[in-house]
Image (cartoon, rainbow, N blue to C red; front, side, top):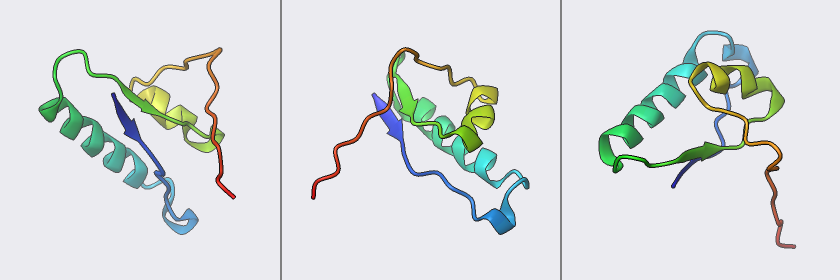
Length: 71
């Protein structure tokens, strides 16, 4: 399993293909190194979901991303 985390683009630089380029590079790097059948996950917040789907990521409903902040 591989997890892509915390991809964000400064609002002043959005809609220029930067986020797509970063995610494409990360996926290509995993493909080059990982064994066949590797699984890549990410948490797609609403603003990025269209991008991730266009790159082949699929919803995993009814699963839900969860976190436990340590306080």
